[in-house]
Amino acid sequence: MARRLAVGDEVELLRVRGKVLKVLPESGVALLHIHATSTTRWAFLHELAPVSASTSWAPTSFPSMLQHWQVHSCPTSNENLLLFLHGLGDTHESLFTLGQAMQLPQTAFASFRAPHALPFDLGYAWFDHALDAQGDVLPHHVPDPRRLQRYYQYHQIPFTSRRCGSLDQVVAAWLDALHTLQTDYNWPLHRVFLMGFGHGGTVALHVVAACSHRLGGVVSVSGALLSTATVSPSSTPGLVLHSSNDPLIRTDMFTATTSVMSGVKAKSVPYHPVALSNKQPAGSHYEPKDTPREEETDVETGAFDASGSNASSPHCSGENGWKFEEMKVNPLVGPSGDLLLRMGAQRSDLIFQGEWWRLFTAMFLHGGLYDLSLY
Image (spheres, helix red, strand yellow):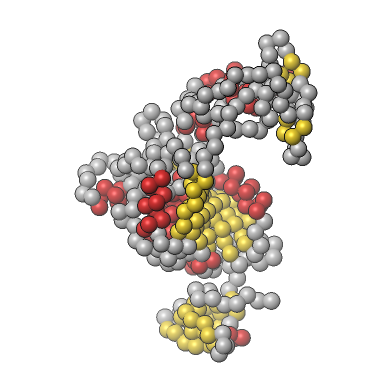
């Protein structure tokens, strides 16, 4: 069954393209804007053929900042389009995998890569100045003229740097990309949704605030507006998820975001730090460096297996206390991933939290005996 036409849909009437301005279902007619003549006319609904949206995108049709992406078409029909924006230090590939796992009906999705590469191959950033001079993540409440030009222009504060990585230029690139999706690939904006994580959520909110058209919706996970001074009211509905104890974004910034974006609601999630031990189940989270660690005990804990059950797991112990996990936990015949992290293994988010020494200590670690045998 064909979907019902909505305002903003692109249609064809006798091979002439137009945009639906108004629909009267009880009368069976719709008001169209004809692109070729820039005129309006009424037409019967049965005469209109919806123009199918396309996922055969050419990279060069998008702005240079947004020419790296992965797109997936829905096997049934492309009714909606979900666009993913990854967080700081990540790439588009992880959220593309998330989109595949979500399997949203009648929804195509695409994951875009941020334009700025971080040093030491640590992923990508949406705006060039996401880190301070020491390499730490710049908190939201700390203004920086290099990443937010409009805030300083609005308050007439002088600044010296206008790098291409500013948030304003990234937002402008996204607005151009949305225009391309609408005009070149027939995606009505009211059927386009943005979902961002961390800095990607911040960019998504600024794009919605800067867009003059209503989008389908926006979801931001741990992302908030950098500044609300120049934000215009937006009718796009959305949801902002954030921690009640976010180390980078204060709660008042989430409150300010929802206060200027009437269609966006916020939901706070409690923050639960997870302690780390070399006896904990594999796959547990790394302990924050300011969280005190409890004394080790000789009580053996279970290992979380692939089936999701928490079962007892035998280990092979060496004289130095290291434990060789069973093959299903570490097929390289070595310690758990948690223990390797404590010994100095490399992980991007920890490096961004200030543990830069992992860039060097990771070179001296091996995953297990099989890893050593390759040298």
